[in-house]
Each structure stands twice: as C-alpha cells, then as structure tokens.
Amino acid sequence: MIPPTDTGGGDHCGTLVGPSVAAGCTCASGHACGANGCYSSWWCDTATNKCHAPPGPGTCGGGGTDAGPHLDGGPGVDAGLPTGTVGPTGGTMNRLYFTVVGDTRPPIINDTKGYPVAVIDKIYSDIATLSPVPLFSVSTGDYCFAQAASSESGPQIDMYMTARAKFPGAWFPAIGNHECTGAVTSNCGPGTTDGLTVNYTNFMSKMLGPIGKSDPYYSIRINATDGSWTSKFVFVAANAWSTAQQTWLDSTLAVPTTYTFVIRHEPAAASTAPGVKPSEAIMAKYPYTLSLVGHTHTYGRKGAREVVIGNGGAPLTGTVNFGFALLSQRADGAIRVDMIDYSTGASDPAFGFAVHPDGSPAP
Image (tube, rainbow, N blue to C red; front, side, top):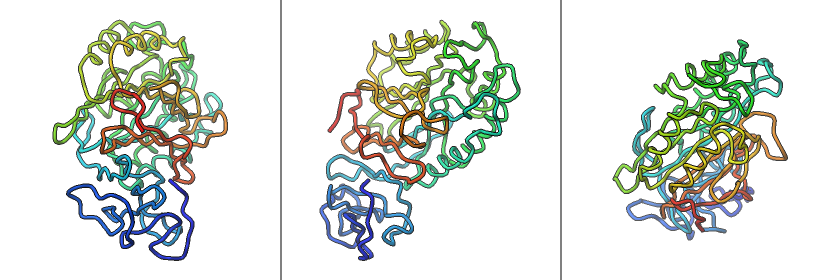
C-alpha cells in the first residue's frame, strides 16, 4: 500500500480518499458503496483506483487499522469481505483470505530465554487486528531450537502457542527439521531413522494435538460457500517421511480442486531433507497453485510457484524484516500474495504478485 501522507483534509490521506469523496474505485455488484466506489467504509486510492483499509490511528486522522494490504479484486474491482467458517477440519468461505507465518526460534540452541517472544507475539497480534481479520492461518515449521533429547523444546513451543492464541482464527502448522533433531537430514516418527524424539513428540502433542491430527502430514479442505470453487491445503512432513506419507500425498494431490496449496518446511533446494525430492516428484504430476515453504529466514519467490516465508522470528537472512504473508483471492479468481512488515503493518511494494489457480502468473 502507498504510505499515506496527511494532507489535513479529513477524508483525504495522500492519494487515499474516504467514503464521502467522489473517486474512481469500482463498486462490486450487489454492494452499497460510498461516493468513492468502495464499501464497508474503505478508502479509495486515486492513484490506482483500488480500495484499501482506512488509514490507521495517527495517520491522517483516519480510523480503523491500516494493515497495508487491501481487498484486491483485480484492476478496479472490490473482491468483497471474506466470510465463512473454518475449523480444525476445514470449512467454507466466500473467498480465500489467510496468512502464512514462517520460522520462529531463538538464535542459539537450548536458549529458551532468548526465544523471540516479542516478535511472534506482535506477528499474531498484527494478524488479529487486520481489517478484515483472516479466518485461518498456516505456518511453515521450526518453532523451537533445542537438542532433540533435551527438555527445552516444550517450553519454546509453549511460548509459540501462547503467541498463536492472540489470533482467534483456526491455525494449521507444518513440521520443520527442528521439530525432529534439528538436522535437515533428520527423519522422525514411528519406524523412521530418528524415531520419536522429544522435539517431535512435543510438536505432535502441543501443536497437532489441539487440532486433532495424529500424523505430521495432513490435508485441510476449504471450499466456496456457494460451491463455485474448491481448495485443499496439503501439509507435507519432509522430516517425517515414510512410504505411507508418499502414498497419501499421491492420492491427496490426485483429487482435483480449483486451488491447491502445498505447505512444507524445506524448499525444493534443500534436497537433503528426506521428503523434499520425493514430494517434489509427486507434486510435478499434479496441478497446484503455490508451494509455501520456510527454512530460509527471509522471504521471496523461488521459481514460478514456490514462495519462501521464513521471517517469523528466527535470526534473519539478508535485509528483510520480520513479518508474515497475506494471501487473498481476487474477484477474478487469482490469488494475491503480499508480505507484511510486522513493525509497520505495511506490505512490501516490491514483492506483491498474483497467480491464477494453476499457478501461472496473473496480471
């Protein structure tokens, strides 16, 4: 979003104008909109003719919460407020609108006192105050940094779950290498090389237990309220890989849905993780919208359909700040991806992009 500059006009804030000011934003059919062409008291950006959340408190005197992103319906189209119900087993929505949080851990192993509580608390508080508030969030793994046989992963995961509780919506986590032994090559779970480590057991009981998942890999279905589209969120456990998971992933991806999001901790480049190469081979057989991964403590696009989101509190790589991703279904069916800075609430103007349901680039 273009940072607002106070012009002193009450209903004017830089290029943004309030509901009472005539502007060129387009009002979607069936909505009662203001003179600016936006509904639900949203403001119009006269530079782009797109609707935005009202400027936040202290900026231009506007009300509401300025989270940076907007209800992007495509050029000149308001996609409408996301509504529906999502729980541990999935749900229905009128349009997809959700966040993704990446790696969160202390910089030093077993340093529970150094856990980035302030960062992850702020991230989930930011998500909870987005306008509108998402109905669900997903995360890409690594919630602790502890020796596999130590007692430190439990308290660290507890800190994460306390922060996560600041967001009232549903939440779905992927497992990371630090929820096994910490090594990228590690493989945990019943019958695997590394077995049931303390870290793995804590992840399963404290993170997946509350949402009723008994395996570290699972799928969530979220479909359109009116039946016009379907989606599945497929959580791959690359550090708990097995022949059973391989069979499950193949059969799960074979089920056709309008949108398919694959959530896995390691990106394709981290090929030494036990489940990366085999899951990539299966993914290549079927259409999918995006692969959402973490592991690298930054954010960016890797190839056409892989998005790295790993800036959730772990020691950062490069010059990015901590934050989270916001994914929003546009009125034209494309998925818009924005990265939100946790300290300012603004989206990164150099990053945002959109893809069609099959993952191909959208304007």
